[in-house]
Image 1: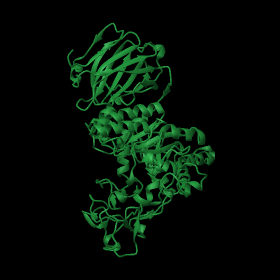
Image 2 (image 1 turned 90 degrees about the vertical axis):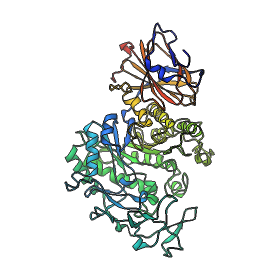
Image 3 (image 1 turned 120 degrees about the horizontal axis):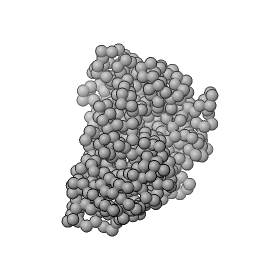
Image 4 (image 1 turned 30 degrees about the vertical axis):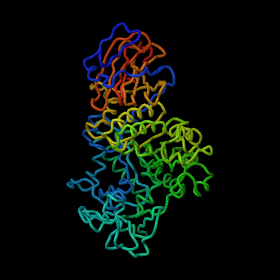
Length: 587
């Protein structure tokens, strides 16, 4: 079989390869020695949550086609969203402007607003919604214009000349020249409010009036929103929104939303708001689940915005505990009336550093670094290949070794047992990167194995993109609705930098995810602890092929050998026909 993909079962009675196998021929020549993978469906068994396959936003029609089970309404623009008039603030993402939502104004908001449409699209096909409840204390003014010129946080007419915030962005909105960036130069703007900041010699405007764009609000304003949602969609137990997030990346407010919140957010402010707003949500809908604190990344696992990344005076004033550990401690130490918690789910954001996230670079070196960075999520010995390594490993914090999920699960166990874990913003490469797609597939395996309860990628991948294929591999691998579900079980690869291995078991099916993270075809020898079934099908995708069947066969015994798994690919081996005694009831 010259240059053809050959798949064989070591003790198989028969082997039937489909025509699709030839499309995945080993174009790189002979593969290296087989990499050993072991699978034990009786070890490390635990159910995993289907909510790990979530996304932020996305097109409603395409979301339904793919079947994303969770849709997040979040991001910087949701920190200031006025549900009554359907207006949001773009904050520092776009000149601090108030922008109207739904273009269809045949209804008077809140009826027909963007949020209602968003929720309705998700609930129509059975997806859950994670909805951000702003806690910053400000919302866009009710009299915000519906067209240009919009209200802006840093009016040029009011605050003077402004400068481009970066080399690729203009000083003012090209469609609204009075809407400034908030950046300035003393030579062009001699105002005493043009002050230096940061370590790069920049200047920005301070002492602007938050009321230029926004009005103060209290938790009752958001209780009324939830009441509106209940009347429109039902409550958390009757078809409505089940999950509410306490704002978005609160430790960045003093930069992202500095036009209304210029002071760094602290431990105390974050918790006090969580207690007040979490209580308000539970008062309005006691069955709803609340997520928080919605961190932005690595630094605010440990310190607040008032600290210098991981350490500082604010952390010192709170017993030296890492911020997230302290926050969890407060959740369990301060129950609401009746014993409910203000926060039910620990909500984190995490982006790998070192130019691999939100990046189109798919070169061999970046792809390898991108895929190695997955170990930041689970490997206690792995040292980050980014600036995180510069934080050092000099004490029990082991800053240079993120070990994210075991680290925070340890904090949960110590400070607030029973709290669920969510990673509601992450990205391991832009939609067109093949290595990003392979990383996305492996992320699902990691989330399932490590016990993440909810996850939403930023953002939903574009229709037909290579990253979308990773979702299809898990949510509809056979094109007829078959999905990976049930229990995560033990799988181990002898070389995780070459082949990632993750296993699942549901209703007589054993499913093994095998990611080839190299630039050459790889042989893989899969050894099962016991007979997994009687027949198998291999599905997969790579840079040029969407998810499809590679081969099928009959199996006897406990080992499967796969030859020539394509370079930079994700593959799902599905073994069926196991004795019903092994069924776990998840089908």
